[in-house]
Amino acid sequence: MKIDVRTDAAVSEYSVGMEIPYELRFLGLTLECMVGFFVCTQNESVALRLALEETLAFLIRSYPEPETWERIHIEFQFNADDVAVIVITNAGPPVHLDRVPQYNSETPEESDIDGLWYFLALKAVDELSFQNQGKDGWRVVIRKRLSEASSVKKAPTKDPGGAPEGKITFTTRLAGPEDAAALVDLTYDTYRYSYLADDFYYVSKLRQSLEQGKIVCLVVEANGVPVGNSSMLFSSDTPRCGYSCALMVKPAFRQSRAILYLLKEVERYMAENASKVDLYYASTATKHTGSQKAGAKTGFAPLALLLDVCPEVEFRGMKASDGGRRALLHCVYWTSCPKLPVLYLP
Image 1 (cartoon, rainbow, N blue to C red):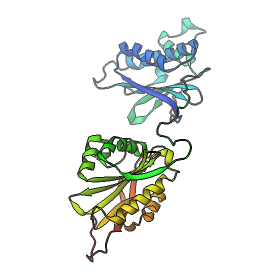
Image 2: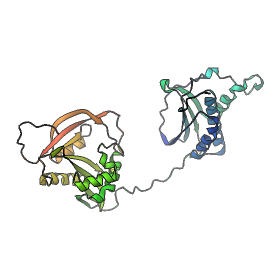
Image 3: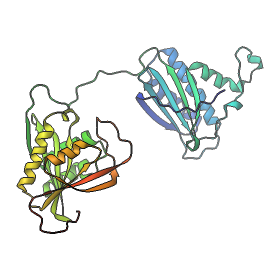
Image 4: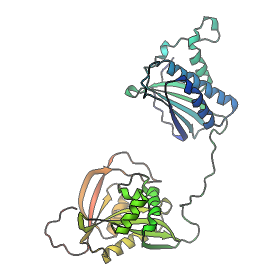
């Protein structure tokens, strides 16, 4: 009996997870969840059910006195190659498969019945492997290729926030408090939940900031629908400075002229200086040259390089970051010639 210590690198197309206590009475709930997730033939469903039930029963019986807070995590996955995968994460005692009694179906009278569970589970699926995760405990991976499509693949529906068909007319304007909800949605469409400015995830807070002039949002619309935003933040701590931030465009419009309209509006707004500040400042990402080009196009000049100052953001529809921290290029836009010989960073 070989213990498989490989890592599971398969990418799941669909997945759902659940946690149960170390109690046998929760087996039925788990099996029902599995049957509801995998849509397959009767024989395949029975085989997966058998492997899961026998494996969970073994793990639970092996840990008779768990802590009250400990749980078994089970994840059901359907991979793009029509393989059903069940991953069980176990925080119980170490698993020693070499101590599981051998069961031989050809000589059942000479076999130990205590090893029947492993024999049955192993025969029911394509793979049943116990993987030692060191300090993270153990996990079991069950795989079985299905003869029919396991999860219902729905035809892609048109994205309601996608680019409209036909000719697109772009316009720009200042956002009002009534646009707060649309701006919150736009923030998620761009950054998911990784954007650092907290106001952009609360409609009430953003509406209040727009009403009080603490935030000014420049919006670009496509055929009357907001698809992009660039914001100016103003703080009483730095009353003569405006922070240019939150440049965001819906994924469907990232390759369109929407960004050009937005940058032109930002440039116009700062040149007119309706907010009566001495300077605007911004932070562009060193990893994204497009961010630096946008800053240069609107008239920002580099001021300082800030290394590893904040977590990487998650752009929706773009490759995920490596989990590191971002270095930022601090930039400044002067509305008038500076009078001080020394400039202190805001």
